[in-house]
Image (cartoon, rainbow, N blue to C red; front, side, top):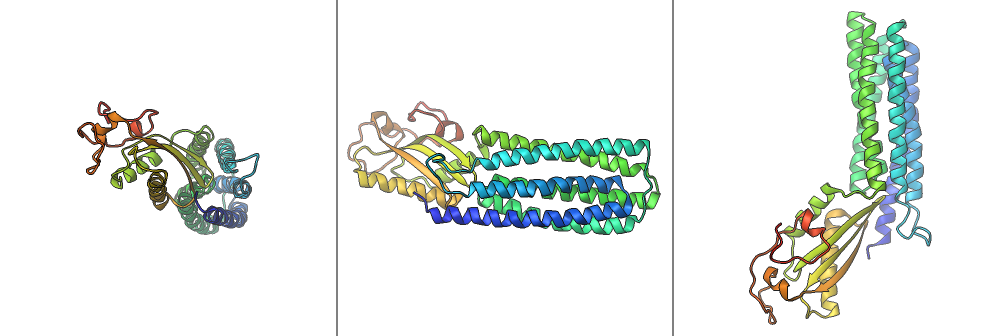
Length: 338
């Protein structure tokens, strides 16, 4: 089993970072509201509305990480990590709603343009907020990937997207400041609201995939590469591999085929080696459950163990593990095509 201290450390790190992000989102919201109040720009209102979502999502993500960090109990034997998927789904929905509201407001502004004033102050204010958002987003995504936290990754991507939209809005406002064409304000708002809608959809899609325990092919691809590059002689076969994400914890289970004559302690050493390899590359927050199988006669054809004293058949070929064959239920044999 993996160390509970490491899991709690990752959860606490996630919680503290999300808490700081939530506080930061409130400060940035006030800056953008001030910029909108000064300029009366619908583009800046677009940014401010998205920041309202940032505030709600920030505190929602904070609560989800608080729940996710709770220890396992009799009612939740796998922990509380799934709440992060629900939090991300709500955040994605809020982002999409904000996008729709922004489009509506921009269309109204096209029909009846508002007077825009003091654009230079507005540009400075939201420019500073964009820079702060981008740095915070990078930290969130990096920490979220390191600790396998969907809530942090969703927050980080949202902050980075907010930065891109803010940067685009700044460029639009500069163009408006130069040309004095008021319709530019609404067009910029509509364009970036579409970007916001796409971001909301992607976050919702990822969270639903997590709730439904959809296969993470990128994670499997990396795992297969690590296993192939560090394969031990006694690892004759690996199959029925499954991975489920619960917040910062990865739950993996698989069947490992080892020589049938290994005693219990020797087989357990092979399992420990596999567990250590996985944790080395994917972090300590991993629960790995391995069922050990003894090899059968047909395993000889795919076993390249050199000093086997009980081999019945000649070695024919080594089967390279792939996402497809490592996920199969049955033991591999020489007829298997990788």
